[in-house]
Length: 235
Length: 235
DNA sequence: CGATTAGTTGAAGCAGTTCAAGAGTGGTGG
DNA sequence: CCACCACTCTTGAACTGCTTCAACTAATCG
Image 1: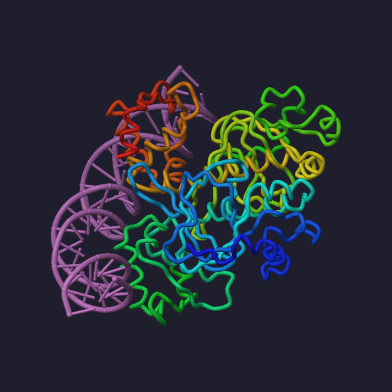
Image 2: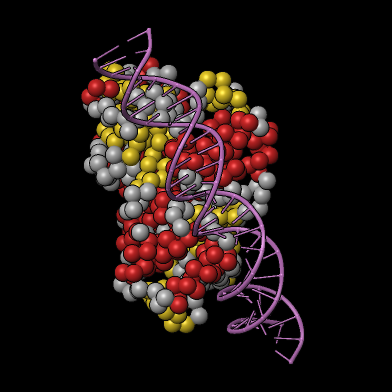
C-alpha cells in the first residue's frame, strides 16, 4: 500500500476535496466551503495494487474510504475456511460505513485492479454530520446502495445455472458504462462471486469465448456481446 | 397462493408510541416526550395474516414499518420469474427504509407467521430527524443491520451443500433466543431462501427428522439439536 | 531459464434437479 | 358427517450439471 499524499499535505488535501473531480458524486457533495475549513484531520489518498488489502475483517478501524478509481472486492469467510465475495466497490462508493457505528470491519477489502482511495476518520463524518443533515442524507444513500447491491448479488449472482450467473456478472460489470469492454478478474474470484468452483468459472468463460460472446482484446480484457449475453442471463 | 388481505382490513388501531412495549429497542427509542407530541399523523397498527402482503416490489410507498411481532419475508424476482427470498425481518426490525430516499419498495414483503406492524410516514421520520440527530443514528444502525443480514445470507445460506445451508438456516432462526424451539415455514419458502428446490429442502428436513436432529413438536414447530446441527453447518 | 502460478481441459462421480406419484392435511359443501 | 377437492409434504427414479481430481499448457517472474 503506497501512501501518495502524506500527512503534511493535509491542508492541500482539504483543497483537494473542494476541487475533487468526483466531488459532485462523493460523500461530501453537499458540504459548503466553510465546512471544509473544519476538516483538521488529514484526508489521505492511497494507491492500492491488485491483491493488496485496504483492511481485514475484524480490524478495529476508525476510517472510511471513498473509491476514486479502480475496484475492490469485499470478502467474507465461513468457519470452514470457504470464502465468498459479497460485493464489488467502484468509483464513488464508500467503504467502512460500519465504523460509523463503532463496529469492526465486516469484510476483507482487497483491490482487484489498481485502485485509488481517499481515507477519512469516522469521527470527521460524525462531526460534520452534526451541522449538516445533508451528510446524513448522503450516508443513507450509500447505505441503501450497498443494500441494493447485496440483494442483487443474491438474486442475480447466486441463482440459476452457472451460465446464467456468469452472463449476469459480465453484464453487471459493463452496466452504467458506454462501452461494452470490460476488464475481468481471476477465475478463482469469479467463482467466489458466483458460488461455483474455479473450474466451472473457467469452463464457462472459455465456452463463451468459443461461442463469440466474449472477445479477448488483451489478457483478461474482454469485449462483450451484450444482446446475446442478456438472452442467456434471462432464459 | 393465499388471498391478499388489504391493509385496511388488517388495521388494528392507532399506536401509542409513548407506552410502546418495544420502545427501548425501536426506531424512536431516542425521542423525548415533547417529540412525540409533534406526531400528528396517526401511527397505525396492523395485524397481518400469513401469506398477506404488506407491500409489493415497485409500489410507490411513503410508509415505513416497524415489526412488533411475527415474521415477514422480503422477496425479489428475476426476469425469468424465479424468486429469491433475500431476508427475513422480525420484531424491532424496520421495513421500507428505501422510502426515506423516495425510492420504490424493493421487495415484496409478505407475512410468514401472524405478524403485527406499526406503520408511519417517511415524512414523519424526515421531520423528526431534523431536530433529533439521534434518530439518524438509529436509522444507520438499522441500515447496517440489514446489510449485515444480507451479507450473511450470501455467505451462510447460499454457500455449501444443501445440508449445510438448511442447518445454518435453522440455527439462525433460534439465534438470540433462549429456547431451541422454532416455528418453520413451507418447504417452498425454505428453498427460495437457500437457492435449492422445494424437493431438496423437503428431503433435507425429512432426513434431519429421521436423524433426530429435529423433533416436530407440532406441525411445523420444531425442537432443534443445536450442537449437532452446528457440527453439520460448519463441516 | 527454470520455477511458480493461473487458466484450460478431460474423465469420473455425485449432489441436486426434474418429473411423477403417493401420503397427509384442511377446508367446503352436499 | 363424510366425500371430495386442493394443497403441501414426502418419496422414488432417472437424469444432468457441477464438482472433484488430475494433467497439461500458457503466462509471469525472479
